[in-house]
Amino acid sequence: MALVGEASGKLVGPILLGYWLGTALDRRLGVAPLFLLLFILLGIAAGIFLLVRTLMAVLGDDRRPNSGGGRE
Image (cartoon, rainbow, N blue to C red; front, side, top):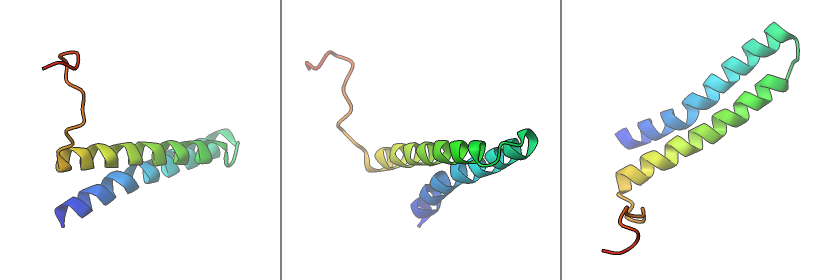
């Protein structure tokens, strides 16, 4: 259950931050939905990246390349 909470926080957190930053910049600069859309899209991308990275760490993905040039 803790993994679900961590995963949802890592997905929703950057999106909410993007919404907040985009809205603040749009109000300050008067260019209404430009920064809101930009930062929400960046938040979605960051949230997915964090979610995938967390799940790979938890599930122990062994597909990462080693530093030995591919030979063992």
